[in-house]
Length: 381
Ligand SMILES: Cc1cc2nc3c(=O)[nH]c(=O)nc-3n(C[C@H](O)[C@H](O)[C@H](O)COP(=O)(O)OP(=O)(O)OC[C@H]3O[C@@H](n4cnc5c(N)ncnc54)[C@H](O)[C@@H]3O)c2cc1C
Image (cartoon, rainbow, N blue to C red; front, top):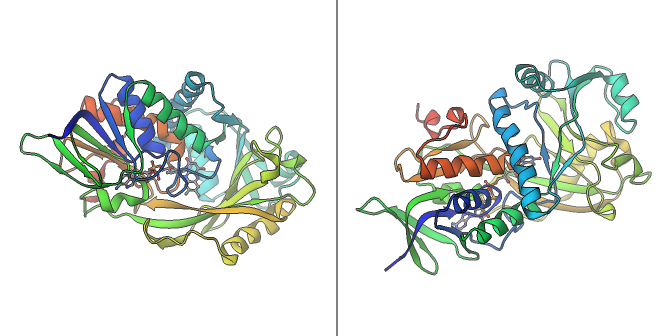
C-alpha cells in the first residue's frame, strides 16, 4: 500500500516550500518531495538576495499579489524570528519611454503607490555612484528592497515541518499519474505515495514533470556576480544605496543590490535580459570570462565605482514563458493537480502569496487572489 496524504507538493524550492507551509498550516496532511537538499543552489532560489518591489513594471496585475506577499513575508519573519526582508528603496531607471520606467509608472499610478520621479541630475545627486545618461530618469520607490532567498526557503520549510508536513529531500520524483479513483499517485526513486491533490512547483525542471506538452517554456542561464567596490563598500551600504533595475538600451536590463549582510562578500550585480538557452539538466554551471565581461560593461558605463575585483559568481536559471508572465493555475487536463511555473526570472518575491494561492487551489479549487491572467489555458488559445 502506498502512503497516503491529502496533498503532495512536488519541488521544495522558493514556491513549493511556501505551498507546503500554507497547506500544512490549514491542517492538511502534506508530503513535500525534493530531489536535492533544503535551500540548495542548483535551481532558481539561491544567491543570497532577491529584489522585491511594488511599482511592478511587468504589469499592474501583479500589484495586489505583491502587496499581499509583503504582508506574508513580514508575518514569516515574525513567526520564525529571522531577518528575511530589508527595505532599501528601489530605483527603476532608463529613458523616459523605456519599458522599465513606463511600466513601473503605470503600476504606481494605477495602484496609488508612493513614488517619486527623478531626472538624471537628481539621480546623481542622491546616489553619487550612479552615472546615468543625461536622458535617463528613474522612478524611486521607498518600499522596495531585497529578500534573503535561502533563509526564506528554510523558514517556510521549518514552519511547514512544525505544522506536521512530512518533507523528503534527495528523493527525485520519477513520475505521477491520476488513479482510477481520482487520486494522484506519485512515484519517486524510493517509494510510491498517493494523495487527493498534487501541487507541482518544479522550477526549471517543469518540462520533465508537468505532463503538459502545450506549455511553451524554455530555460535560460543567468549569472550573478559579486564585486569589491573600487573605493570601498561605504557608498553601497544598504542604508544609503537602493536596489535598482536599469534599462540601458532596448534589449539590455541590468540590476543589482546594496551590500547585504556580509561586507567582505562584495556587492551583487547581474543582467536580467538575454541569457543562454539551456535545460536544467544540461546547464553549464561554471561561469566564464564572457559572463563577467557582460556585467562589467554595464558597471563600467553606469556604476564605475562597483567595477572592482570579482569576488564570486554563480549561475541560476530563469524558466521563461512566451509572454514572461507566470503560470499558476489548475492543470488543464487534471483538476486534482495544480501547477506553478514559468516565473520568467521574477517569481521569488511572490513565493508566500503563491503558497497561499496554491493552498486555495488544492483545498477549495479556486482562489480569491486575482490570478486569471496567469492561467495555463492562455497558451492553449
Ligand atoms: C539570477 C536570478 C535572479 C533572480 N532575481 C529575482 C529577483 O530579484 N526577484 C524575484 O522576485 N525573482 C527573481 N528571480 C526569479 C526567482 O528566483 C524564481 O522565479 C523563483 O526562485 C522560482 O522558484 P521555484 O520554486 O519555481 O523554483 P526553484 O526554487 O528552483 O524550485 C523548484 C524545485 O523543484 C525541485 N524539483 C524539480 N524537479 C523535481 C523532481 N523530479 N523531483 C523532486 N524535486 C524536483 C528542484 O530541485 C527545485 O528545488 C531570479 C532568478 C535568478 C535565477
